[in-house]
Length: 429
Image (cartoon, rainbow, N blue to C red; front, side):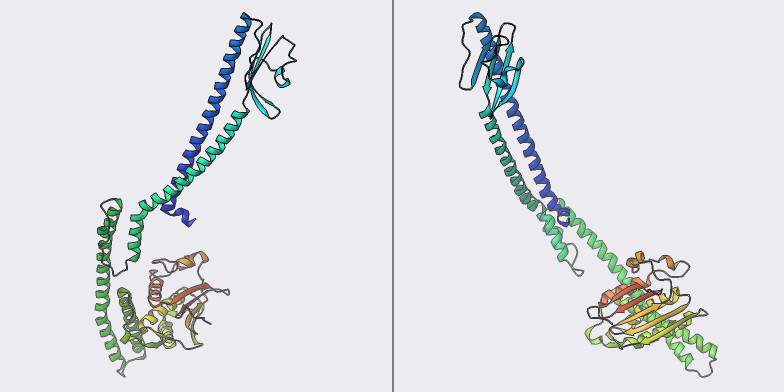
């Protein structure tokens, strides 16, 4: 089916079908005209011969019957047709097609009151010629169909060559390629106009992306300074021993929020640049330690609900990635689980090569699972809860950047299980 959808395949099939149909119609017309003309010619000739013989017979009753190599004539009295071969005796006046033994005849009969005249013509050879003509025409149809196929292949290759070249150049281009280099490779025809339109679109798209990247980078960078001020002031206030327990709790919440905002800003900068950290900045981070901090940060969101937030490390995991990226990835998933689970338990488990978040919430409809990473997507279970639907989209982009994989599955006991697999090519327990 994929081959039939290709434009070149359609051109080849069009040539083949057109050539075959035209050949079949031409062959049918030839056979029809040949059969009709031969039949009409023989019938007219026989009728002329018999009418002429009858007129001569009336002038000279002693005139013998006509006799040729393929034409035979019989003259009898009415009711006395014993000399006439049996297949022709009972034929009425007119022109008839008769089969006798293995031969075919065209017969013309004139039955008058005073005599009957029969004239027969052996058309067996004509039938054989017609049969051979049919074979020849069929062979010609096959030949012309093959020629049409060859012409279609050759023509489609010539017609599609510029389009194929354009597609190849587009596939060879990467995100770092300079736009505006396609049109110069093609003449000023339809394909050249398409290449010029693609160049123009690439220019506008690059400008838009650059503006978007610059804006996001500027915003993320500018947010770092006030967040650093907030974090510094919070740490300074926390260091004072005369703080009440209530104020200390509030300051801790501010510190956690500032830390989360700083992590999000750092992660967004990585996404804007679409690059990982440099070789010198690469270091392994303990995923279990980060996951435990994330669980502590989301404890205040539980509030008065009958909900337990549990952390468990089955096996330690270390990943070469910025701490902020890991924290944002896990934080969005844990935050969703806490937000949509009204009661029960949200468990964060650090297993071999992955972190799994298991909740006892409503889960996600099976038909909605393929759309969880779509921007602004919110399932039916999300009604009545706050959220922009961007958290999982950010998670997906971070996972794609670092080669991780996030798997969603509904639990049999109810709720949802989300696993971030840091080494998807390896077997995870």
